[in-house]
Length: 305
Image 1 (cartoon, helix red, strand yellow):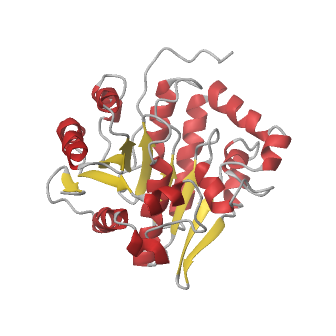
Image 2 (cartoon, rainbow, N blue to C red; image 1 turned 30 degrees about the vertical axis):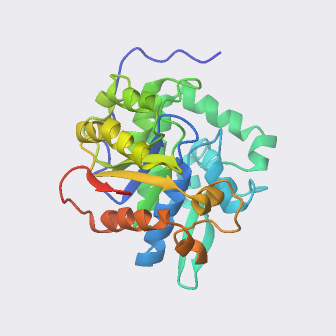
């Protein structure tokens, strides 16, 4: 049985740093992890700067699985750091996994968990800490980002679905995002329900004061009519959120295969296969706007047509 949360609402102050990028979604399977990996890899590859991706999705750690081709057997992980009895010491001993993108570019990954964390009950300790001490959990999460910012120019966060109400209170989920991100990318599927959910009091008011860098609609092999319908449904939501960019990404075969781990590389956008992916061109445009914090009007459209 889940613990009862305090009845009050609270809103954490988001980071005032557009280089701390969070990737959230209102449901699983929207392409959030793929977008985090592709944008993070593109930034590291183009700018040759230090980039780290943190996998916060302990229940469905797709980012960790793609970086390690599985879960790591052991080693330092997010759940170990956050639930550590000596949190200050854990922060001083952060060791990350590096993924090479090219001879001159790499990206570091903080995995969500390891097999050792499961076997030794550390994952259970992590969830108990999260639910029993939600405000301390959020404080530690913010402190982790602060420490990583000392070594990395860009920090990307791959979150669980933002409506993680099956496992905890929505206030915890939202405040965790606010405390660990300065530039939120919302990734959704093209269903009208996704637009309605973003438009309701369940989500929209809780994003107040946050910089929304992009609203991304993931579409698999869309027709022209489907793209036009997505524009009609989601452009008003983009304007309401005050998002800088409105992005329609047609997940083509190469991008989709990389997302499910069928191809032997982490990112399409920086691989030899990028020429075979029409989606890669849109990823580069979005990454370029993040690199330069472009502000050519709200809801700048990136996508087909």
